[in-house]
Amino acid sequence: MSNPLALELATTLLEGFDLHYRLFRELSRGAKDRFARGDWAAVREAVRSRIDMYDERVRERVAIVRERFPGDCESEALFREVKVAYIGLLYEHRQPECAETFYNSVATRLLHRSYQNNDCIFSRPAISTEHIDAEEPTYNCYYPRSVDLEGTLRRMLIDTGLGALGGRFENVERDTGYLMRAIAEHFPNGWQTDQSFQLQVLKSLFFRGRAAYLVGRSVLGDVIVPFVIPLRRGKVGDLYVDTILLDTRAVSRLFSLARDYFMVDMEVPSAYVSFLETVVPARSRSELYTLVGLQKQGKTLLFRDLFWHLKHSTDAFEIAPGVRGMVMLVFSLPSFPFVFKVIRDWFQPPKDADHAFVRERYRLVKRHDRAGRMADSLEYKDVSFPRDRFKEDLLEEIRKLAPSSIEIGAERVVVKHLYIERRLVPLDMYVAGADEPKLRSALREYGNCIKELADANIFPGDLMLKNFGVTRFGRVLFYDYDEIAYLTDCRFRTMPRPRDDEEEMAGEPWFNVEPNDVFPEQFPTFLLPPGLPRQTFCELHPEIAQASYWLARKERILAGEIDESAPYPDTIRFGRRFS
Image (tube, rainbow, N blue to C red; front, side):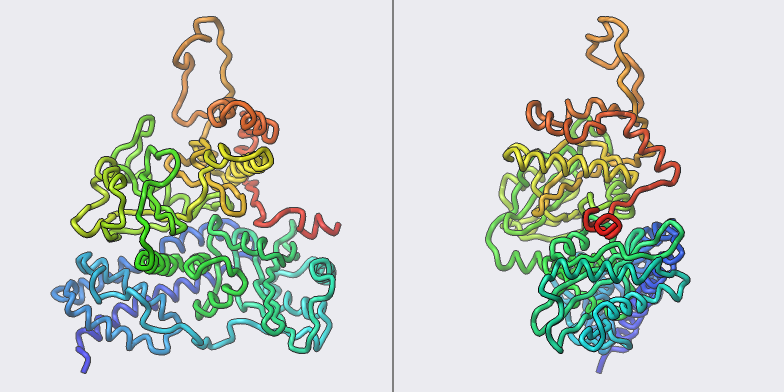
């Protein structure tokens, strides 16, 4: 017979999760109305609110448990029984995997960190998420063989429900005609050829920034073709179809963690993730949960993936290749596609920040529009690794640079605070080994990255090549955030001309320089090696070295004219492609 106290505590924990997920769904459900109204300020605020709401609910629940169970809430023996009782409460729950993660988040704040080595928490899932039924189907099915394909596409657009909120399409016949043309170009032999052919579309639209995305797949036997239809608002507020993504690479680029997470209303998140695994097979389940806004569940899955990998591999953690960071100690496991970043105890000059400031910069990036150009980071605390998987030179580096952040024991290394990011090739290393075509492509991407961050009101601060990385698709991302600033907080200046020989030969600036002053004309000299790299960059992006360019971007942002770059090429947008 179950312990009544354990059941009561388990019920208290589940009530906390149910409250969190109810609020999470309310915020996600509101995305449709915010989009229909074009209330972009509310969109941005919702993104910021959602980032914080999970930790707020965890803190509340920890306080409630300590108040209700003051003498028992730190008992590992009791929590073993609580875990069993909690599993019983999850029978027929619609979000059991997320509820288990919430349980872990509360329990690990109550128990001593030895919990990592015991059975008080869910180190692996206890409840299967396969075939969980929602009250309504997760996706709609359409059968183009029973009506014409164009009519089916029109019905899919109408079924989004945006019209019921006052949004109407500018010209739905024109847009479905564009869709038909794009499909015909992509599938010259026709899309549907069999009676079993169907289109399956997720019930909830995916909202991000100023766009809504209809996510679906075509199914013909065992052949699945993903597609995504982006919807946007015109200048007078009417809706239009911007394009259709049918290329696997284009769809994968849309589902990038270098952008905001989507707002999606999901009763059964595991069903959405299972569907997305067929749409974006290049993304892991950890990444897919994160992309739909459940980043804590994404963190849990990545953590489990890491320790499963450690159990089935033999290589050792090592100092990450590339130039050593002045703020971060970075290490990697060669066989695992992520890097691990720890804030150093002391920073090399001219860096003069502290731990709290660096953590706040990472928090800023998490809450801000990443514009497809800033790598996503997942934050962990008190992670215990086997010591024998660390190379000695890495342990020595840890002792020297981050002794307060890491404890090195006889058998375990405990990292008190850690960021994990997808591993990229540092841009300086990529440029050093690139032939001329790859060099040109990388430097074009480098400049585009700087410009797109500027359009999102972000100035990276330190634009050195070593702070940027290249993805496997050749896209350049920024990943060093300790000097990041809002563009509107910077003062872009032209270098004053020396008035005499003494000023020209001075070793230090002879004019006043404030901490937020930026002199763009110095960029090519200080950022790129002389010769072909510098010459190519100046040819591709001459405006980046001009203060007037930055001042114009700043004025546009201050005037509320913030640009949002589409997460797909302009060349495939219907307005440009078919006009």
